[in-house]
Image (cartoon, rainbow, N blue to C red):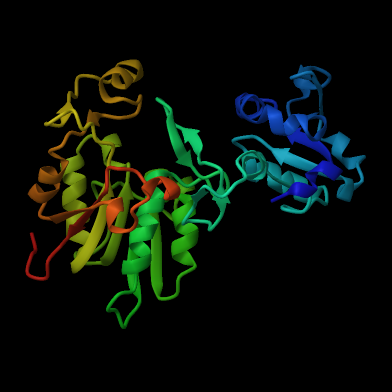
Length: 333
């Protein structure tokens, strides 16, 4: 896991908020490396200091011996920077990579926990979220608790009892799950999102352009809490799910709340965060989420981590379980 970095001259590409968080979180690892400086595309930053390291324009990289340097990319413009570095003759993995993907496995090395999504072991999973959840995010593939549990369930149920390709619809796709699903044979995979840059197709979940009974499996995790008319979205998901198929539908649930709380008059981001837990959430689901799913037509089963292991902490599973929603063969709406 990049132990050879100790023999390289290290540059951080990016002098923005992501880099600041990176330095705060991984300062102990960075202190052990030969950090030369910081690179940023903004010319106004050239010559300034970023955590006591000089900021350079990308031209500095042209002057470096390629196999001597390693570039840690810490920016929301990762793909654009990758293209920029490739044009300079650098290779991803050999000369540069995502900063967290490189530094986190070093900081969290160990064997106390195991990630089912990437197959790596660590001393612990990384903290994640606001409020912060401990033992949450994989240091290598960045999967979260719910994604690891989803994949554990899918592994046993993707191709079961099927002599034909399985059609799978992935809403707001998580990269860790996308990679794993598309690597499996016999899967016809399609991802959708309201944002065309985040999936294979842009689509509104309340107005799906698919025929009835189109998909064997649907994954829709932590999406419905962002949608004003979630009941319409659930009706659409039920409609396009094949009879005999299942959907994994996850949302954040407040276990202290019996009934889902929503108020469409609350629109300001700061008020939504106060009332619903996040600035872009439009409701706070309660323990009646299962009833909401049943009202859309689904038959619901809650699958918990205990069905797969007696040591959920080792695998970083959450305690909420999966809402696996079936459309029985004789059920249509």
